[in-house]
Length: 383
Ligand SMILES: *Cc1c(COP(=O)(O)O)cnc(C)c1O
Image (cartoon, rainbow, N blue to C red; front, side, top):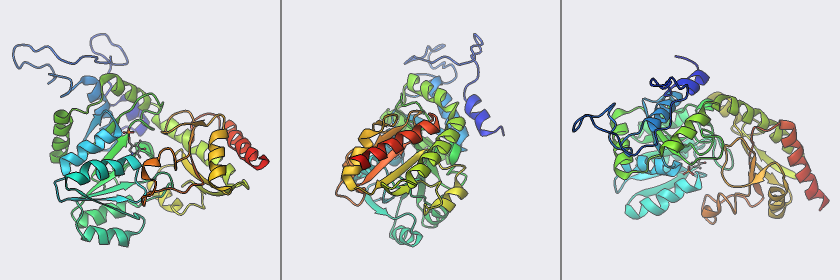
């Protein structure tokens, strides 16, 4: 099989046979002419059911994650919703990591629990605690690693084994790592979900999501929810995502080396209490991350010695790191989770420390990024 970068550039995107165009056109069409009633060309009928541009993205995602099939959606949460609707019945319970993406928690807690689904959270690094929860009956074990915003690392292979011993479907949200850094299906997980909005798209210009899996029966059920529920990705969004993915490998390498440089600079500064980056030796998940990932990614968080005031001020004073939600784009972003990305989980067991700042390290020049965070930290001390 060709290598990752080769597949990222070629899979699902053959040149256009009509004109020879190297980049296949975007199929901006909602419907397809039939050669006589029911005479479909390549199976295409109506674009909610299938569109060649969406198929090109789906083929590519399946290849990169090592799944038999992939389905792409209008957002990461739409993808998660389709998967959960295909799997869950009233009375089933979902077990999530205790610092799961807030929107995922909200999806199940606010939209599924009222329909009779149970939801529990657990410290995923504590395998005994996970085992005890599984023994009480769990339909879906939802793993997210690295997690957000504390970059906790969970052992995918161990959790997959444990989940399967108890009959649970093991799902990994692979958004933070991307398939370049981590391939959960190869480690034993059943399903991978993505917010393609983040590293896969990579340019902060499109919202999307995906489900990747190998079990044909389950794939059929999710595909039916995609068709029947209709939260598909549009052709232009799918095309932008394919375009972004072509550079995924080089971007992830650069995100990882830039993030390490920024993490080291932060760790050495007096205004910093603690840095959470799996690439640092000081990170409790460092060795596990080194084992199950090919690099440590572009996300890190930092706790400031000066408390909430210092954290807010730091997040507002960088210049290259722009203050915005989201992550995974070529440009560096900074955020204050307690009032931005994690505002919806304030007061719950998912609440985050008030002196925490999260950085999505982009692919600008590392030196410029380091200078930017150091100047912002120095300005705190001067205040
Ligand atoms: C952003 C994100 C999601 C949700 O994706 P959307 O595209 O915003 O719907 C899910 N999981 C993680 C880890 C995310 O960062």
